[in-house]
Image 1: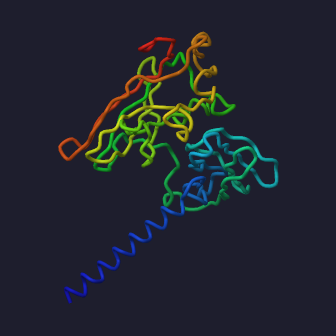
Image 2: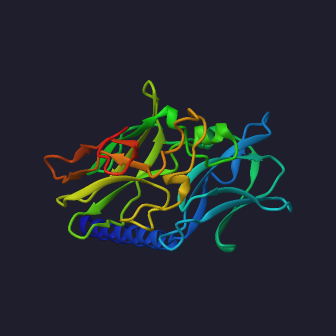
Image 3: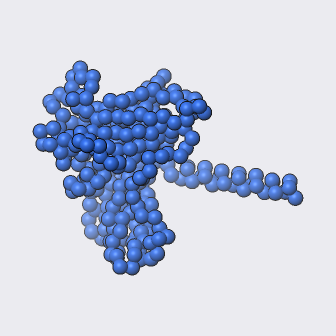
Length: 288
């Protein structure tokens, strides 16, 4: 009986591994999907939020997200190679969120809204815990002066402020080749501001016993080790800050301090690396 039980357990384990592998292969980039779909709202509500997650992959660092509501024309949401954001959806309407590049459809997802037991469905929201559970991970923050404003990821100022962290990511680079390790993407979430600074927290899973260089960047990661050249991230004026400081001076661009070399092992399974965005002037070696 014990042997039969072990055989059954082994078979179930292999089946689970095959299922996980198949699911991972199915979600190849480009993709866009919606968490908690259909969106369930309370009986007395008429609208809710859906969390969209997308990635255009390395060949589409400027992928765009659009939405079509019922039979209306498509509406632009954001140009960002990968990201996550909440979108408002109303009861009685049909939504199709599309990921495209140069008018070529890469992926799409249809979202519906229905009334029901909201306690059975988590509320879509940014990650709020600073703890990342995998055994080997680097955690930290990205901060920048409030006077710099926030990236105008949406025509609505409040939406840009609420989603100010989706333009950032943290990556692990191989110091020998200066190429990114194509593993898990960093998780980003909005944290409490620190005085005159906006703050985003992140978590990134790393391989064990491997030295990496941890860097912060904006936009799409498909062009690493080079930064995304989109002026929105490098040089264009941002919104919601001090108009005299919301754009880098002539000849300067946005950059980050804080990159570090990290190697995790059993004795040191976690590390902290913090970054600060600044305006990099010619021959500048620190924040201004």
